[in-house]
Image (tube, rainbow, N blue to C red; front, side):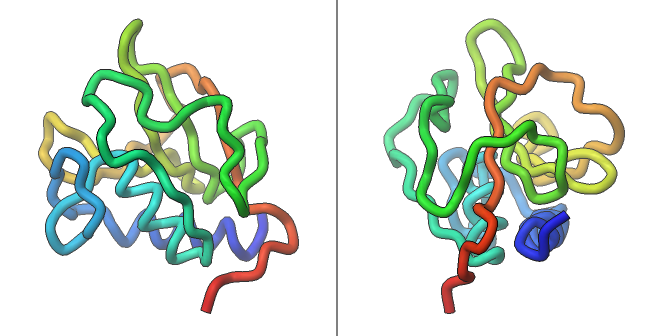
Length: 136
């Protein structure tokens, strides 16, 4: 596990309990699944831009993307960002931790850590690129 991955996973776990807010990007106001990933990545020194106008039931993070500072991976290391298929029409973003994933749960209205095996199929995954310098 990389130091950057450890920072991203720790930052994601620190967000547990933050309230859910659709298209939320600020932990003080609330986060959605993309907001959780972006906040955790920021803490790991990586900035990733995503569209602000996505629909709730559409792809929130394009599986074809390779955002600057991230590389494709198998999604098995803490700090990896996972694009998950939760049902036939909905994708979801989560951050891998040692014990499971951290994600924004719209039903529970907060950011949670789900312990254990990820029950949804992984569509794509990214991790902080080796040698990526954290932003100061």
